[in-house]
Amino acid sequence: MTQTTVTACVLIIGNEILSGRTQDVNLNHIAKTLGAWGIQVREARVIPDVTKTIVDTLNETRRRFDYVFTTGGIGPTHDDITAECVAEAFGVNLIIHSEIAERIARRPAPPDIMAARKRMARVPEGATLIDNLTGGPQGFRIENVFVMAGIPAVMQAMLGSLEGKLKGGAVVRSFSVTAYVGESQIAGPLTDIQNRHPSVDLGSYPFFRADRYGTSLVMRGTDPAELETVLAEVSAAIVAAGETPQDIQRS
Image (cartoon, rainbow, N blue to C red; front, side, top):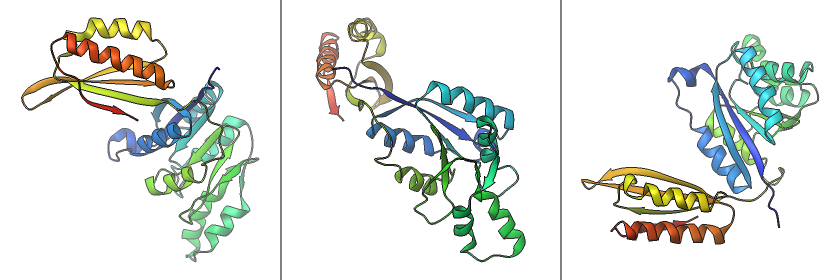
């Protein structure tokens, strides 16, 4: 039986990420969460607060992937332009959503601050809301694009509200084994194993600890039986190189 593959792209929007001033932690959470839901993150991009870049990237990725998730750029300041860019990408008007506006109005503030907050109530016409379990303004969805906050705690609350509401496919599992063996010692056998099992993603990651070089071998795929086969073949290659497979993990 053929297993369905559901794909996603993550767009991290913000000059502060590209400058290095702010370190992104959202991608890790999004990829792990979506992976558990059977949605495979195939690409992630960090792009600036530039209208044309955001619009062009959205239009490209929303046609290539089942889902696109954006973080950042939906706050109250002048450089928070994600909502208007999404509206432009879809060719619709940007409107004030009454439900978001009502939530914002619950917190009293001077008129100038309230006016700035009201920017967060702007959504493309036809969008539906993504709940914000922290109680702040909601994110929104239009077709297959999900627009969420950049603040990690808020983004996680928004993403969590989507559990059970998205289509998922085959869940990717990960097996791994480590050994004190150099990559070059097992490069040939790894190539042969990968060629025999093209549906499994086989990666090697060198490390240095306890004054010794070693390699972590990671196998990712959707078929547990094939992963077991690949794990056995990789372990045999390690033994053939004169070392012992260690720290075997399945997740």
